[in-house]
Structure formats: structure tokens, C-alpha cells
Length: 323
Ligand code: SF4
Image 1 (cartoon, helix red, strand yellow):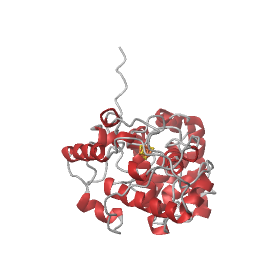
Image 2 (cartoon, protein in one colour; image 1 turned 90 degrees about the vertical axis):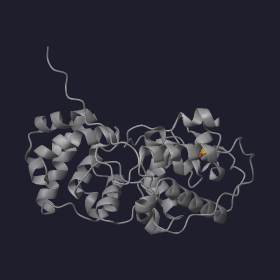
Image 3 (cartoon, protein in one colour; image 1 turned 30 degrees about the horizontal axis):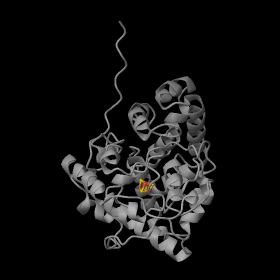
Image 4 (tube, helix red, strand yellow; image 1 turned 60 degrees about the vertical axis):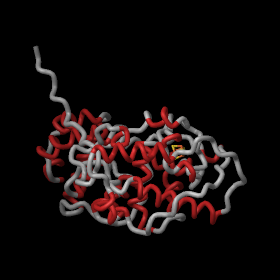
């Protein structure tokens, strides 16, 4: 998860003309619908990509007056429903089997891709499956194990620090409260929300680089500071939606609404987006920008959930044999 803040863009552009779209999805949580709605095959993923391209508007919408607060909230909730239909299989893209693994993987995900973390953690957790094991590892050994994720010295310090704190202050268990999690070395609000939302079922909004960028493009906030973005978005959506909303928005940011080249011409929520036109609007060209399962590429997880319609990520290539 890359945390580099990006410049807001939505505020600079006039909102798009409101367009009548298909009827909103049923008020069913995406995690409930995932099992029934997710495409089950690669072919289904392709169909999703084609549908995405088909739904895109042909030309840029004209500017119109700023929206009322009520209109912003209504449009935001419609976007959430559309994203729930588009990504019924949205999930955290880090492989984990327990709260400790998720906490470690999230710390490792700073400034790198989730796929690189997923390729690194199997070896790490085989050597150090518990906080006690990780706290006892010699730092040089831990550095070597996590080196592929980058910034491995700082991350080693955080992992040994947080593992020691879990062992000494929390009985070797990951605490399920935000105020405790943020006292752990290397754990900020974003990491704490990831762990709470996905390991403890406590609703949380995860503002990473993708979420912040899309929240600004959607006109949900003009803020760049992650905590302020979180507060603005929290005021729009009910708590029960926070965790899945985070996954859906991040999924869309990784697959369609990229930082530099958003695929507007292949974006199913273009009619609801005030930033339509910021990226490629030609449907053919835009479709080529789609990524992961929408672009026919492997996903980020080596062990994705059963309903994921794409291919799993490949394991890390073994080091080249010495000649
Ligand atoms: S890809 Fe374009 S239309 Fe779609 S959400 Fe991003 S900026 Fe809006």
C-alpha cells in the first residue's frame, strides 16, 4: 500500500452533469452478495471489463453548478452501490490468516505493492509465526527476510518493536481497539483501521493513496490529510459501510481510476463522477488501461478468496542459481 499523498483534483474541475443511471443496487452488503454475484471465471472477469467499457459515456459532460450537500451525499451513496455491483468480490489484497499476520503485512505494505508483500510473507511467517518468535529474531535475519519489500531496516525496527510490545503488553495478542493499536511501533491510524476492519469486524475507513485520490475525484472531500479525508467520508456514509466502501474504492483506484491515467472511457461509474474526462475517454484506449482481473492480469493475492474472478498472483521467483 503506497501512502504517498497526492494532489486533489476533483475540486479543480466543475462537476459533471447529473446523468440518470440504472436503478440503484439493492441495499445488500457486498460481503453478503459476493458469494452470489461474483463472476466465477476468467471469462467472467473479461465480461466485467467489457461491460465496464460498454457503459462508459462517449463524450465529456458539460460543467454545471456546484452541488448541494444533499446531492453530494446522494451521489456518493449511488457510487458506493455501483461499486458494490462492480466489485462484489472486493477484499483486502494482503494474504493473512490471523490478526498478527495482517498487522505485519500491513506494516510491510508501506511504499510497496501488496503483491510484493504477499510474495514475501510466506517465508517470514514460516520462520516467525507469532509475536514471540518475531521479537526474538536477530534484526539482520529479519532484514533479510523482508528485504524485497523495501525500507527493510526501518520496517525491521517496527516489526521487532511491535512484536515486543504485543508480547510484553498485550499477552502476545493483537489488541482489537484503535487506541491500543496506535501505541504499537510503526502502527498509525491507517494500519490500525485495516486490522480493525478486516480482522476484528470493527468498521473503519482506510485512507491510503488510492482512497484519498478517488475521494477527491468523487468530490467527497477536498482535503489531502488522511485523517481529514477520513472524517469527511465518515460523515457521508453509515458506519456499517465503512470497511467494504474502503475495499471497493481501493479496488476501483487500482483497476480503473489510476493516479496518472484514469480509464474514464471504460469506467462504469463515469456518469456519476465529477472528474470524468480527467483520464482517457476513448473506450478502446481506456479499456487497455484496465488492470488486474478487469485487464486479464493476475491479482495481488497469492491466495485470493474463492469468489475472486481473476488469477492469483505468482509466488516470488527463486533467486538465480550462482554460476
Ligand atoms: S476513471 Fe474517470 S470517470 Fe471513472 S472514477 Fe476515475 S476520474 Fe471518474
